[in-house]
Length: 438
Ligand code: ADP
Ligand code: MG
Image: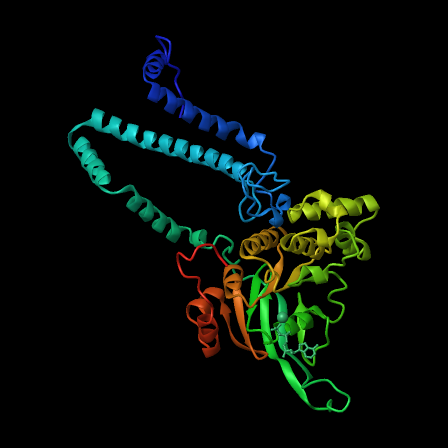
């Protein structure tokens, strides 16, 4: 819409007189003006960026407002659970609110004025019809209309209730093929006398599945069901007893990981990151061994780019793993996994050691990286919510066997196996109104 300039008497004289005569109006106007000013320039003044997870430190969480008896407090109004500055959050929030209000006003103005013009100029039955429609609309509470619009939009845009998952690519070719995988371990306690030949227990028993390129396969099952063993077998970290794993049609043996095409991310980044190396050396190691960069400068450049990709500041390069929060450490592990330019990443309980909000951030990051790099994931988790959100297909593992397998929605909405039903029923639900997530 264009804004024609007002001609004639100086604009606003009327308004100005009305304002100066009423102190209440003047007070209200100046408060509104202040709010607009804060929304306009506030985000420029604040040193914090709540949208950049790399600058957040969970240790800053729930800081009280200034003057509440905490030394070294940087936050005027305190911080929230994730250590975000409350003042910044309010400033950015007011900017958003104003924008939404502006957009809504413009929209209703456009619709209202054109309908009014149509009714006025055309008259007759058109006028009557528009007036009756307006009457009907006015008798509805706004919230009902909002719910109606949301309900329809949710049907039209299926991703609305699943922000992370994208629709699976049609008939994607299989990148990973797992066929008849089997592995057993010596049963019972290890001892010189106890350990006899033949006493073995199957940890993975005839497991087969395929993962199309660019998709996520979720593997769920209770603790001890054999998930991590499958991960290690596929990665070639442990010899198989039977079966085969193929990537792009080629069997992967112990070579799999050496080419850097397969990478792994583990539950506990503290134990998978070398505590004596700086983040730069940790992330650079695969780049060096695979010869993906020439000079030391190029290595540093690639490391900086990878850190940026996982939303860590470049300064993180010179620090050590213990100087980061759990979520940040998992970002470092992801950057390291990405550094060899893999096609396939095996994620064994990648977010199980993180709290719920950080877990969501890491999953979102993983989903974004998958899209950017066309990655294929094997996502192992005992957390059904995580798998449901991320996976295109799911396999349910019980005592080393796949008891059920299929598209995520089908498995969760209509589980066929008794074990899957039991697993779904065992998920503890947080009662509504119970407050913050555990
Ligand atoms: P999950 O990851 O699903 O919790 P694992 O794959 O770690 O399960 O373990 C599956 C079974 O194999 C368990 O009974 C475990 O005790 C056994 N197991 C795993 N690794 C070894 C090993 N290196 N030596 C002996 N037994 C093992
Ligand atoms: Mg495990």
